[in-house]
Length: 470
Ligand code: SAH
Ligand code: SF4
Ligand code: F3S
Image 1: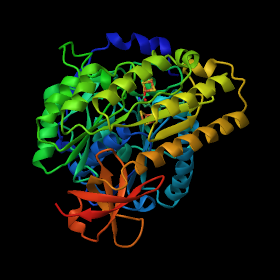
Image 2: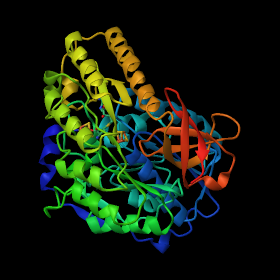
Image 3: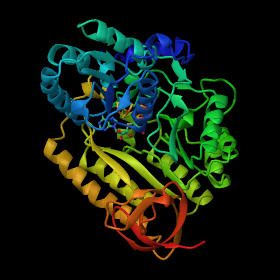
């Protein structure tokens, strides 16, 4: 079981960097075989799946587009809310049937769910899964697969190695122009509702040299955008003891020649002046910030262990707006935290109006076994929680629309991702402010390039515009 007491003691665990070496012993395990990876959850999992794909291809596997007809299927799971886990039980159920017809198929489950003892028990008892491994064990993948082929028994490795930093692992990136770059792993915030500090281990930062070299290499390969990843990027470097912070890293990465830098996720308490100044000063740091607030009520924030107040949050927002006047701000909000009153919920709505969020991920609180909040008695009915969520969504949707309307008539720079599913002869990408933009064109050679688009129309979920010549 996740234990808050044990997890808090882990500061004593040493952080060690493991440099991945391809072992020729496993060279041919995947020869002639195909793999498919299901990825759920956050960008951290997306980045991990790219590493697992890299490792699998280094031992001979080729990527398949059909999970039900693959030799190896991995489920990279998320445990953040009950409904995230429900989806995974569903897919495991489907694979069970498929495995009966194809006994040679290997199924592996990894990511955050296996880090929870009860989930692992349920997987072992009820599902036909060959390999179970946690977030700290993915570099052992070739060995785990070899063991699974050798024996009919389930191979389980969910040992906590909470201080591990994996470097030099091969990666197969999904995009040729946008890349995830982990800057740190784990989380030591212990928000009382959240499972992540238990599933991802202690907060640990990669060395700045490793990060800068990765970004320089991406620039050389033609990448246009990086998104720096961590559960609380503003805590970057605190564990390295070098007096080098996230703001310093932004200034240094700006010099690498990468055109766009984004980062996620920020914690309002740790977001500091230097980071905000870097947003103003660095041309490559994009004018968008995702700053999860969770609640606008000071008592709820306190019970959530968020360590800031409504006023403290607003102070940072106002400073940001002063430094980067056209910034777009988005957030995460939880409704129906145990015993949240209507009045407390109204404080959240007030904050949403005051900030003018241009987007929000909104969630109904979901108790996670082993977290402190899961032990709290809760007197808010399900019906009330849904009603609050609907009222909140109505308000945040207005924010999305306003965020698009302010660009109508203006020219925005769009990094082109793909042909658009929004209609024939359209392409799409994201503007600097992270607004999804569709424009008329069927020129596929624009994919991966930054183009200028004059916005003609704003919708709730996207903008529409016309290409303009330079
Ligand atoms: N490290 C990031 C993101 C964590 S997970 C952060 O601190 O913001 C993404 C979001 O999921 C959180 O911001 C929170 O809004 C939501 N979340 C986390 N645990 C949850 C729970 N038990 N129930 C409902 N939402 C939750
Ligand atoms: Fe969870 Fe809080 Fe850490 Fe975010 S900062 S991952 S919400 S414990
Ligand atoms: Fe989910 Fe784990 Fe990310 S619980 S949100 S995949 S850190």
